[in-house]
Amino acid sequence: MYKNKITKAVLFGTGLILSATSMVSYAANVPPGTKLAKVQDLVRYNDGQPASIDPQKVQGVPGQFIINDLFEGLVTQNADGDIIPGIATSWDTKDNKTYIFHLRDAKWSNGKPVTAGDFVYAFRRAVNPATASPYAWYVQMTTMKNAGAIIDGKKKPDTLGVKALNPHTLEVQLNEAIPYFLKMLASATMMPVYPPAIEKWGDKWTQPAHLVSDGAYTLDKRVPNGRIVLKRNPDYWNNNKTVINQVTYLATTDPVAAMNRFLAGEVQMTYETPADQYKRLKKEYPQDLKTTGSLCTYFYDFNTQKKPFNDVRVRKALSYSINRDIIANAILGQGQKPAYNLTPDIIAGFKPITPAWEKMTQAQRVAKAKELLKEAGYSKSHPLSFTLIYNTDQRHKKIATALQAMWKQELGVNVTLENQEWKTFLNTRQLGNFQMARDGWCGDYNEASTFLNTMMSTNVQNNAHFKNKKYDSLIKEAMKATSTKQRNDLYHQAEQILAKYMPIAPIYQYVNTRLVSPTIGGYPMHNAQDNIYTRELYIKAK
Image (cartoon, rainbow, N blue to C red):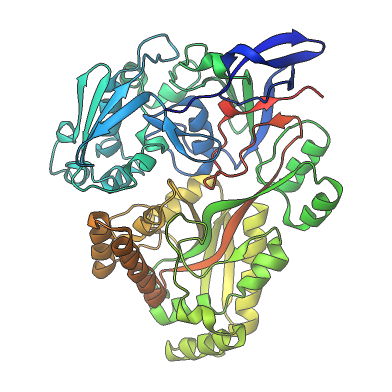
């Protein structure tokens, strides 16, 4: 069980100061002697407006950030990304297939107890076709008993392998003993929800007046297309170890505007930094700039079910001709690495094998690309033309414009760029109403399957609409693998299939670069998933 150093807060001068001999601990892990600001209100930028803050309906990073503050699952993460107890204080298993979770005396924000039945309700809700959860597949990937059959409509949600033995004891049954199961439980999809609120308010249950949460914060305000304000939850089981009282999330697609507001002292944390300002910020504001590794890959989806990208030769030609060094080093230049695989190098326990085309020089790749396009029937008199969609954001626009120019110069390809707002973009991409689309995936847990699972033909996150029986069987076999070596061998084979059929064009591996006020303590420098839990932060007195 995770325990913090025991400390106490006492009034001192213009702020709070922590004494090493006190009797109250802080989840924020405030060092003894640290002087805290009297006002513990955090204002930070998010990666756009969330499409949803419903744990079983969330898609994308914007919603995940907010849900991490509002809700808590059986397990959670510390600042380093390690799995620690959440609502569950402990768990038992004899065979890594049947897990018994022991719940603490936690409460919802309305004072009602959090029970094992609330988790049963949430897990069943996630796989129930009536919910239309974009992450139903995620529960299936845990191998929870009957999850796949329920998603396919072949069994009832109440047959899912989850049971409340009593209000404080939850049983979960898996079909396979996957070693990363506990890691998967920290995802938003696996967080509990309060059944009476959903049953009473339906889709409106996430409005401020209706939402009931079990995390460190509650939803106070939500301005349409504006700010989202969360306030400290006095009923949170660990409330007396939380420091920040309020967090306000702002959204923008303009990182320059966000930077300017930060430098003016109006916000304390940005989501990212403008690529063309990075060197200046590093030189002039080194105390504010935070750069960390990220468990994310940026790529483009080819719609493999539509012309012209139902032809693998066309997909390979466009992917090969991308000069990833220019994108990563010249256009971005913040430490991003060129990507040639879906799985990023930072992943725990697995090292992707370099595909053959990565070893080619850029000139060789372009030459091969021209050859492939010619074979596919394209020429100067019959040039390849298509539309690329991306969600509204200056960074995505800059990359799309650069690739548009590369493909025109190197291959004579005509690309029409189309930007869409986030919700519209998600819907367009998922329905397959596009030719090529921007994409990016950040791991839901730190294991290669969190990336490779997304390319299975049954996965709704497979925006390339790639269908390959051999690939599907490899991933299913990996879930049953009994050794790390066996599992990694299967992952390597899966990456080789992606290299052979090229349903996506990997472009770069992310880093997280944001401006963070020096007054913010507890910022996570070693969380590869970039999970920033407000409960672990604190504001120091100036």
